[in-house]
Length: 360
Image (tube, rainbow, N blue to C red):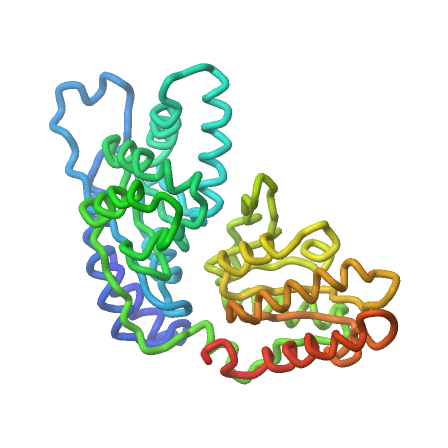
């Protein structure tokens, strides 16, 4: 007999691969109900195949929200992996919206009056289940289309399960033209079960508590150690690059999953990025793995200035930093213009290594 999601979860507890958590366990029956209804539906067939059939029973989706590191992404991944349908997709919400904006741009070139409709139809033709990680909306371009896009997906039988760090009512909070966004919140609350994951434990913080998060020198041993942390935080998988739209530009984090992103110093400081770009990164991730930080000085002064801005942004946003570097923070930048001012950055880097820093 097939196991329920709760039984699968309990098996992980017994095996020691997960830690028992009452808040997490309470979510599983909700996900199990969605799973059973989805699996009971026939797969999508041709245009006329279901002409005389009864309309399928559509499961209500789930909006799972709560603090960072509570296990939301892990629960969604468990559900996604064990839902036995082919037409399903798991994607970071930022990445999905970037795809949608690109598709809308292409469709508008054809001169259609309503570009959202064919885009929604294309998505619905491909999937019956969409799982979004980290739903948050900060971009007005996204805010102005999500209502009609999601309505189109729901109308075409797509079930949505999503995680978020905030309840629906706090999405796009204080955003420009927010009254135009409010119907989308009502739509989410109508079509999705809204469930707060009330766990007292920040598992992401727990995994890093007391762990080494600054590795020097940035060689093979550091890469291996950071690879182990990546596996611990993400399960070893990857959703691929995370692409963030910032003022008409694209900022790319080469590897991302479950609120954790991985990049090199040169990815983020070797390119002409600025405060707005780093703010977008800090808003999109809760843990940043930054590798190959070199010694800094006159030869890479511009890169050094960007690094200072990046660290200031991560510090203010309480984003956890895991890094490999050529040296300890106090010895990265010791000579040349800017070295004196870098002492403040070195102090912040040292403080950010604290076991409970991001929880403060």
